Amino acid sequence: MKAGTLYSSTNLKAPLSSFREALLKGLAPDGGLYMPVNLPVFSQDELEKFSSLSYPELASHIIGSITGDEIGIEELNEICNSIYTFGIPLERVEDRHYIMRLDQGPTASFKDFAALLMGRLMQYFLGKEKRKITILTATSGDTGSAVANAFKGLENINAVILYPANEVTGLQRKQMTTLGGNIRVIEIDGKFDDCQQLVKTAFMDPSLAGFNLSSANSINIGRLLPQSVYYFFAWSRLKISSEDRCIFSVPSGNFGNLAGGIMARMMGLPVKRFVIATNENNEVPLFLQNDEYRPISPSINCISSAMNVGHPSNLARIIAMYGGRMDEKGTIHSMPDMKALKHDFFATSISDPDTRTTISEFYSKHSLMLEPHGAVAWAGLQEALDKNPEYRNELCFALETAHPAKFREEIKVILNIEPELPETLRKAESQSEEFLSLENNYDLLRRLIIQNY
Ligand SMILES: *Cc1c(COP(=O)(O)O)cnc(C)c1O
Image 1 (cartoon, rainbow, N blue to C red):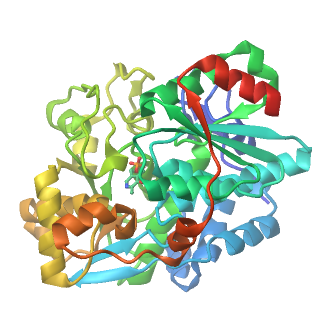
Image 2 (cartoon, protein in one colour; image 1 turned 60 degrees about the horizontal axis):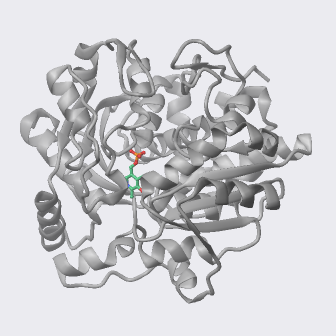
């Protein structure tokens, strides 16, 4: 079996790493983000065969081609079969334009695809080495529940999840606090940024160096690779030929989802263009327009709350893929190929009023329900089609990244209908909760880690 892809750092000052090392470390030692340096490229013949594979088979094939001999193929097959047990509905809207529903996983968010695989791959390496780690993560909602569900019951991993007391919905909280076992959930009397700061302080604290802390947010390459698979899947189900070049509209916040799509294209997926659809946090669309990058701080609160990001952590990766270099703070040291970026991406920002109008018009016209993030993607796609009428006949997908029931209150105001909770969320509603409340004080978190891990 062939050697796996190696990983370099976006800061270019770290040695090349294996997948195992990049996955378990999270951040490269020079503070940069890990990037695959030699992704496999699938031939047209191979792409042709993808249409006969199930989702777990496709995931195992693509991830296995990337990780090579680092992971046993039988173990990888087993992992993919046991986690990818839910469907990916491709709903036809009109012409060859589809909604790709990534909302059928255990927490009804697209983040399940990556979190589930990342957890199991971490466990794979740690189990072999008989080593334990503690995942420490701050969440504003969706990441925490996806991570908590994905890591639940994994023997060699404990998870500590911090969330801001007044910034997550009751349903989001219950998805984390009803699990118990190796999942510890802490409510912080503060804002999301405070939680993030506590986590960062813990990672840099030398007195916790022996505690094997690691992170599960989208700086981890293990959160990106699994997100390339559903792009191949959607295309393989609906293409006319292996040269049928399609368009994906991706609702973007930290740009991890899009980074997965770009990697899929690097591996040979025929993509004509990506639509980058943001909410009012429009720093990336403006960057592509003006060749000048200005983070938005503080970020703007929009109803598509998982995309309220004023400085996306994966932008450094996308800039690196286009030959530029950007550091953690957002300073660009060398410009990417802007001409290529503008050619490959159509970027637009959708306001909250336009998001609401899209949800309501889409429902009356197509009898299908969108939640705010999917609505941003659909509105972005419509704008791209209006500006490029030649795309009308192309195969297009707008990504629906969460289930409408996760945004019940908002949907009820807009449509006057209460979306029904999927089975998995209904279960969490009725179970008993367990969580700790802490003041926003680093010393308390530090003591808790020392006493428990
Ligand atoms: C996280 C999230 C996004 C944004 O994805 P990124 O990878 O951060 O760009 C979009 N929609 C939903 C529902 C999310 O939870």
